[in-house]
Length: 448
Image 1: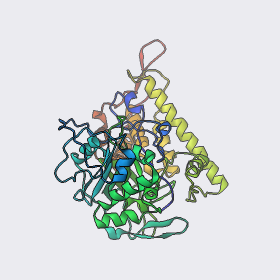
Image 2: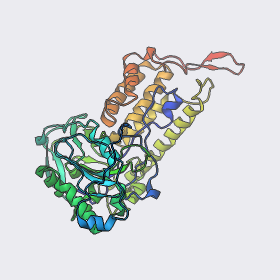
Image 3: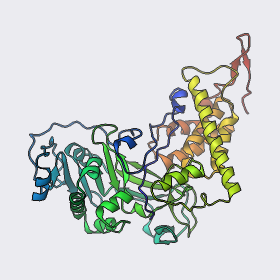
Image 4: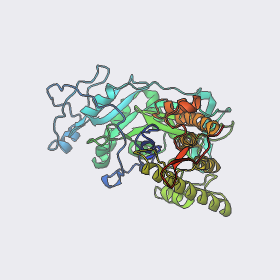
């Protein structure tokens, strides 16, 4: 795969849902940064991935700190961690320094190792982790891809919406030891973490790009927040099977991470012979911005979108600017009327939502369609356009399932809108407006 740290991309209709009286709500999200996660690079805080669990601590004990070298290096800094009892299936920590310890459980799916605090080990150990799932392994194959190394190629037609992989993390590392440990010691601790995994999982980890365990971690990890902005929440998550999926600025897969599980879903039909791809960055950017982001991490993208002829590339950049401007306009107009229904002649126009979807489709932004379909469905419903409201609400349901999952907060609202627009809260709220004299005048006819 490409030599590039992974990122986690969040999608939401930021501000739009609240402006629509919280009926079209979405989870908080942020622009996630690549892996080198010094504090100045933490641009925002993600919502909690795991629920905050309270537990009664047992009396703290000094865990086995492992090798004499560890104790010699960190003996003066070491403090016994606040101890929470982990389930019996989890092995007692073998190495500790300050409050961070190595935990492992070979029976969590295909094995899991943690380098974290006792509290976060408890959160992980007591939270449900889905089993590995996805389409049959024969539906794709690993193969050399020119200029990219190993990638995954479809062996059959993969339909839009099919789950390619659902994989729990094999390794979780808290960001502090990743950044602060002495390199030699860090490699020793990381190797110990990998050695706790079952042989097959260890082999998959070691097959990833990189010369050392640290190097493989640095080049293939995803940033995960286990508990919002609480101390030590930021972790590096390793999903070895996923690491063979290469980058494309117009990917055919969307990925999400929830409950320590990485899920990739086809966002369009993928014919046999096509490479499977995700985007390592948020694709709704101009070519120069995308190249700048990727160059920052030593990566030269040669995907079909980045190698368009100059005229087509320029047209693409124009569409990106139009998308950004239209989204900002919709956000501003809806936010201004969030406390009450806007009854002025100014503001949202029914064609704005459809135009936004049109631009997204023209740009082949198949992995990011949920917000635009949701906007369009609601706007058409607000103006009483029944057929279009149904159409876009139905598309929104499918996009939300692919991009967020069945737990998406807008999904039930979109289902209700697709089934019966006239019973939805948004129906025809913009059909009437106030005339110059203050009386109500009909300004938009309800579409039949």
